[in-house]
Image 1: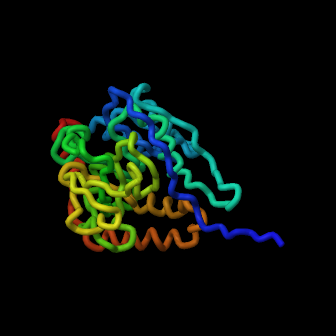
Image 2: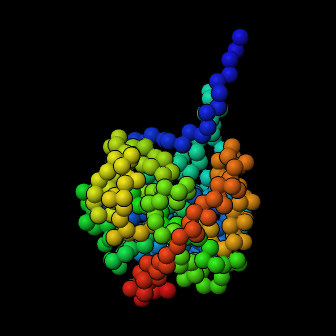
Image 3: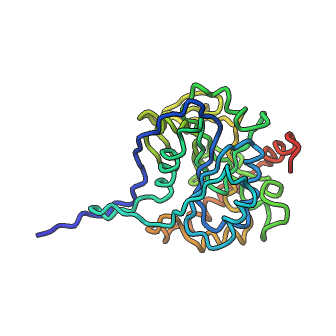
Length: 300
């Protein structure tokens, strides 16, 4: 009798052999996977260009709108790599789908990382904001001894907008969850800036360098993965990660209609998203860090 093994979910952790560093490697790159982000990607790219990002490694997960044209019109050609990434891969034995975003991140680190000191793995609704310095490179300069930097989400809600307002995201969405370290479901999570030449395993919300999941905060305090939820680990003194989770109500509704990246979770997706929004907006504070950065450098 032949037995079928159960499908246990996606393969969401990918081990890699990191690239050997180039002697003159420098600067920060962002790796991102995109699908139909025409409305907001120009602002996202321009903001990070103003913050000193050197390279953008963009994975096209089946865009059918003007996303890629906007990117090409916003960024210099030498700073931008766009790769087709509209695919579904599975392990042939287990039938488990390989997480396409994690696969993109592993590809970016292995194939582009040798020339870079830092690589950030974020989405188009996430902005890396220097809090004191005039660039991200300056904001990271004191962290040369770190190989992985864990940045907590600062979760922004709708800020009262039913429809997308004129003037972009940064200027119009100024209210976020008061406590980034809240244990309320969907609010506390981390994204990472890593040294790609030491990256050995990739997950969406956790990275491993040199075989370890330990990471620093933006002050240089190092903690194991299980200790990063402790309040003393929290910092956004030098780099703040803004996550514009909902944007307007109409965009939130469209996000729910599109469904999740993980197809096997589509049934619970709408409830999860609405619960997350309720948690974000239950207690909010005004946050002008991104606007303050643009004012500090004379941009925007």
